[in-house]
Length: 284
Image 1 (cartoon, rainbow, N blue to C red):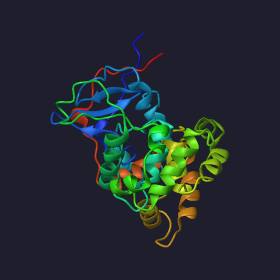
Image 2 (cartoon, rainbow, N blue to C red):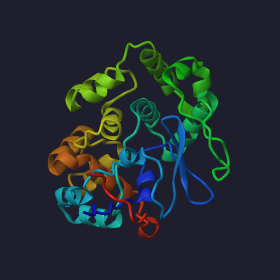
Image 3 (tube, rainbow, N blue to C red):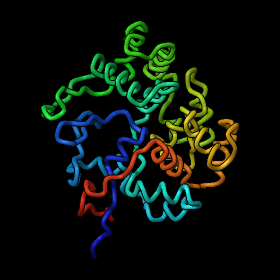
Image 4 (tube, one colour):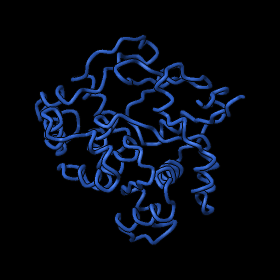
């Protein structure tokens, strides 16, 4: 029996601010490093690497998710404009460091700083990088990052976050902080554990739990989400805590998907149906 075809829009998924690890080549293909090897996704093509199934959460039933979060006119338009956008499943260590740098920074600034970090401290990765125009290195390991100087990190654009990032790298490298425990201990406990690290607040913890831990009920709230949700659903003076509580209660178990659709749609990201791969099938 044929399995159903999967809908995935790589463009909106990779340009929606949930990941900073993918870089666009001249051909329109996106490149990254997963498990120490070069990977890419190209317009209209089915990925030929096994990890794509979990990286792009291809097992998520978008029809079920849409039915659950399509609760009002705003969300209905957002879903219609972003059909096929999926949440990313990212590696926890890289996700924590990436979102620790995100406070009060634009996506472009975050990606630029993280690229300097990986190109300076990361390991080389085999592959043909000619389309990208440069050889992308792997994200540095905790030990590699812990060996860096705080002034070097500051020169990458991390500013006051540099010491927080370095201290966190040292705690992971020395075994004082258990990332696996943070991911497997449940949403509430994992969030409290992550927030025990200086430089990690509710928004960063929720991003990590959503994009790395797979806790789809998480509803990260930054300045932009607070403004949009406040204006559309609550009131313009709603604070982060109230917005997060509203999002989780209103959208339920797929609140994380709703948050990403609100964010991407309100930032002007749109799906590109003509570039979506055909013939991508679900796994039994």
